[in-house]
Image (cartoon, rainbow over the protein chains, first blue to last red):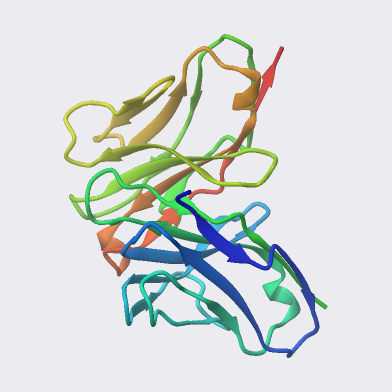
Length: 115
Length: 117
């Protein structure tokens, strides 16, 4: 089944403890991206990647890191999480954002709570 | 400045009626793409429909159509014959090369649609 797999689904952590949210897609998609969703703010783009070893900042990159060493994987790293990073996180992929008509396939989301 | 504006935080529609969800956008680039996504209460995000800025015709996908008015910079989603399963949050999004990255995709704040039996 074509899908984007995020893990974990739920995570409670303490301030300052490094964590990684994994994202993997099995569709050979070029483009991958991370978003956070907060009430009243919609989805805000954190980072995106156009292909292996090519990443760029979205609108809210502070406090996050990403890497794209393989085409299928795009982990999100919070090196020193803070309570304001408590949010619902989505990983998304697309065959190509620049070509017509290709929307995102989203992962199931990761609900992160930082205490 | 908001790139994507959805002015209706919540809407109600009677089952089997049509409903229009508003979306306006702002960009200075002639080449952009507009998307609509659905988020049911279960939380997953589902891609519904796409409209390219150079497309001459309004996009349609089953009961979904996009009322694209380029001069007004609006891309409203029309759902015909609403069903109870259409109750969800709907997000408008734009791929906007003028936003500083050709591959950046910006979302609006969403409209919560509730279908009444």
